[in-house]
Length: 133
Image 1: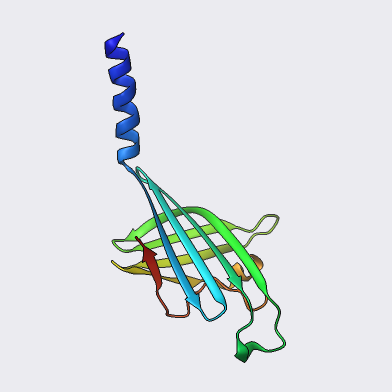
Image 2: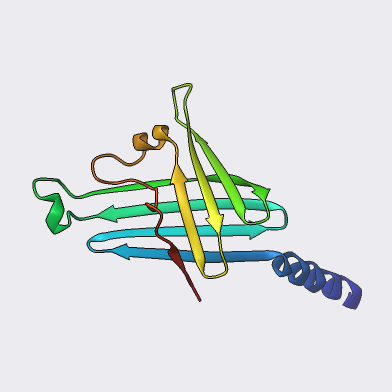
């Protein structure tokens, strides 16, 4: 009985030892961009969402929001690529995420406009989303 309890506790502890979630945030005027990267063992999941209210320079534009998530692959030491198939189509949204010690920068493919329209986009425009500690 003691061995079973010990084994169960050991499995729970070892499984959570290889799990990590990092959050990144960029607020640029009225634009808010959030990125979440979850790593469990060798599996990486990326989720990003945007909430954009028009900035003063964007008069006449409308507020929007968007979200995309999926599995990612590490293509370099500090670079992830997440590809999300657009349902019912032969196109794929691709996000390239460049990680630094303090944050992340995101580049999106043109197809990602399916998930975020109007002034919304997942590209960080060369700005860094800061890692939340």
